[in-house]
Length: 158
Ligand code: GSY
Image 1 (spheres, rainbow, N blue to C red):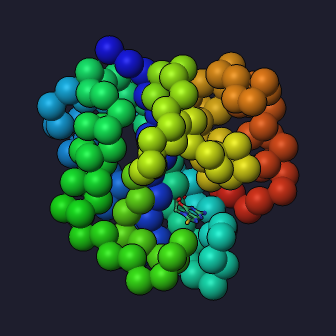
Image 2: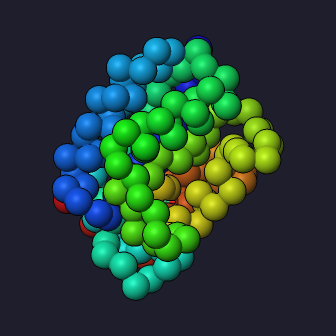
């Protein structure tokens, strides 16, 4: 079993219900067990700023799937829950990001782990710190990165 962390985000539709359903489908998927889920956060949009706030969280899972099979599973759930993306980095019904695949470095054309932008994003690092603040990313404990980013980017429990 490999311990992984998955980022969940939504800013279209009933975002809280969509995230709850995504977590249920993740837990029902073959080869995946959802262990713990961080609290939900309302977060300022990053990247494309002219869009609604997001609801974000992070899930800790154990999986027997390889990284590509896990990614395919995440994409199936996104599609089932009606993901429509009109603007690159724009509003979306559901985004499932593979953040960490154990302590492995994955570098494939369509998948990189650790996720290349996670260390700059409060909406990832704050919920990740709730689950495992002692993890180290780029040499720094996740809790320290999360504290710094929470002072720079708008993020609140909801
Ligand atoms: O990569 C995740 C999609 N996304 C988000 C998000 O989930 N939350 C916030 N706050 N901003 C975002 N920008 C993008 S793209």
